[in-house]
Image (cartoon, rainbow, N blue to C red; front, side):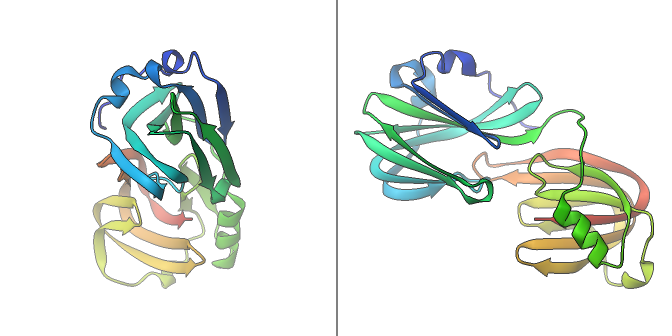
Length: 243
């Protein structure tokens, strides 16, 4: 995994004027003078435009000019988060929108302030996980599959199940050692068969057999890196649900 920056969020935000926290998104309005070296490098300039925070579904609507700095990884408790800083050249009303989480937030910055935006990327360490309702509906639609959820990311974007009542007759196709699904990559320990059995309304379902290990990776464009998030070990038949 790539290096995690030594950034003390508590120090950066000790003089915050406003804090918003919901669904893995935290935003602070802080004095710009408190940011120090975070805004000394080359950032991404913007001018009256909309910008998506790469690797997320968060969109910033900014009717002004300024700079975004956003290549920082921080660990907070057992979570890895991406930290971005936005500075505006003048007073600006910034709208932060994350449709999947029902977030549509309007914040007003004055010229001496900046936004710190912190987005949860993944959890670190073990945690109790439960399948989402839509994944259970997919298993039912695929002939009543049952199994155990082995891995899910923090937002249930991807879920991997070991299937007990295998419908092996469904699985025919070429042998592959890796499957890419959007920003996700599944790397197998050996050649196996992976068939996409559902692709509707942004949700995909993949049946996999003939392998012993799946390495789960995700690409974060804003960080320019692939990260190995987890590894599923043990022979079995798998269902992968990507939303």
